[in-house]
Length: 218
Image (cartoon, rainbow, N blue to C red; front, top):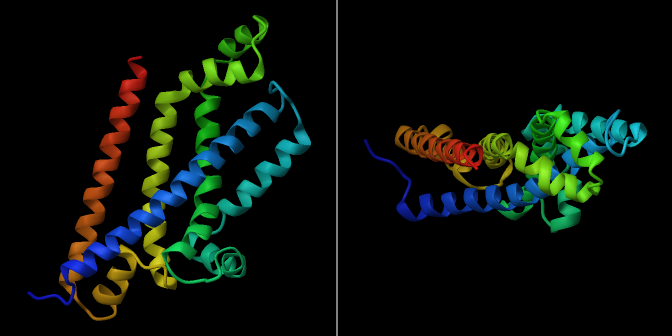
């Protein structure tokens, strides 16, 4: 069996996927954590209860999460062009990928933080700890095993979304699979991309599980 994929082309596509995933995840991880903390603090009976703010943010997150990644990428093309100056390419794909993964991370982290025993938060509040101290010294350490798994799930989901970015000119492994594996009936190219993605996902899941066990032991 032969293939039209060269080593250089494969490495370029792998780099594009790594670039899109890394940058989008880094931004989404920070924004998602921020949104999750706001949701936890402002939810009904939260430390800084603000139901209108909670409702608005929660609704926006639900709206963004209801859109499949491909549809979201197409829908925000004008915004992408405004920010990046182009609607195609790996750099342009970062905008919709970030919009896709941020609410996903926010909801997962919110669930992770909700798993914390409320007695711990109440005790910290009763001792006079500030909101920042409660978050930094109590909430995040207590939820760290679950947070590690949430981030792991998020980055694996994001890798799947980057594959869809290839369908609209985002490049990467997904574009390789579509352009060669599907459109040119290159079965070897398809096998290579599938095996590569499986290996990467397995490694990331193993790393996430290891981090979760580490945090549980500390």
